[in-house]
Length: 211
Image (cartoon, rainbow, N blue to C red; front, side, top):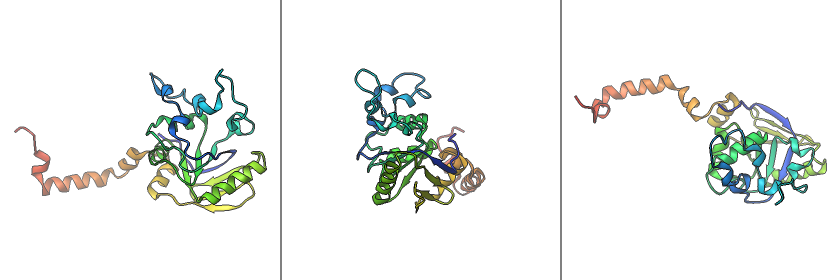
């Protein structure tokens, strides 16, 4: 089950390049084989984090202090576009990322975040750019605060920005529930509907059954 998300104040790393796709977040060859869950964090952004000889790229932001400890990413437009691989979200989660703030995301990546306890926050590009500028001004020392209950972001200088989120997805993150668990919360309603429907349309429920 996803880890519940309430409030978070943490180091944030700006990765502002547009159209970072899921192949950049995690290479497909890292998803081949057994037991991949639990071993993907070190390969998140592998093509950016490592040089051809396997050593760390000192220019990549997540290889520098204090960004190594980042739990929040501030991203350029269309982050997580490309293929539907859920492993991209797994890699970020195992890397320690709890939230991603951007002006737009790949649709499937966006949905996969909620299923794995990562909060994707959509705000105007001007807000994203402002957050990135404040982080860079403080060399990463300024933390970003996210309050999912209040639906607010607090910048390193204390500016507050509100964000919108689907109420069902918000409830799931607050309680640490995925789609299946959220659906099971309405088990009584589902069973009541099924019982009523059986009475009204018995031929539907017995179709294909042998007498």
